[in-house]
Amino acid sequence: GAAAEPPAAVRAQLAGEHLAARRQGRRGPQRLTAADGMTYSLFPIHSGEAGDEVRETVLSDWLLVVGADADEWPEERLDLLYGVTQLIAVERDRRNASRTVRRRLAQEVLELVHTGAPPAEIAARLRVAAPVLLPGLGTAPHWQVVVARVEW
Image (cartoon, rainbow, N blue to C red):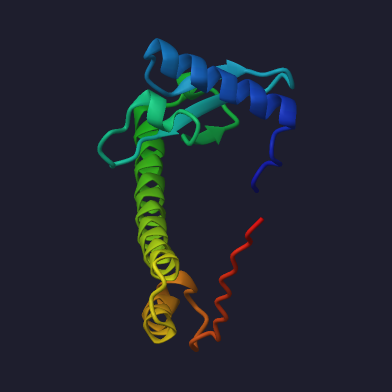
């Protein structure tokens, strides 16, 4: 069965170890015996996106944390874990791409509102964007766009 999530203090310690490893250029997996006495192995999830610089990603890194010491594992088991991290990276990239599309569509709608586009044009854009902005809804939602201006 799956183990319980480590306590907050241990998660902070794991994050600190990961940040220190990134800063020092150490490759994973990192190993750490935490305050709870458990040894953890941290496997970074490397994104396939370009521009994966430390400054850009350090606060949004994903890790696979295993409650065991990877130093004691055979090479086949390590290869399996690296394969799992690659699968997780693919899912992360898929989610990021989906978010990018949703943000772009939402930005287009906001620009239409901001520029004073006719309500029919805004409504048409929302109908097209609805399946992407609100996936799984099944039917087109009813939108109410309210624009207000306050003058002092």
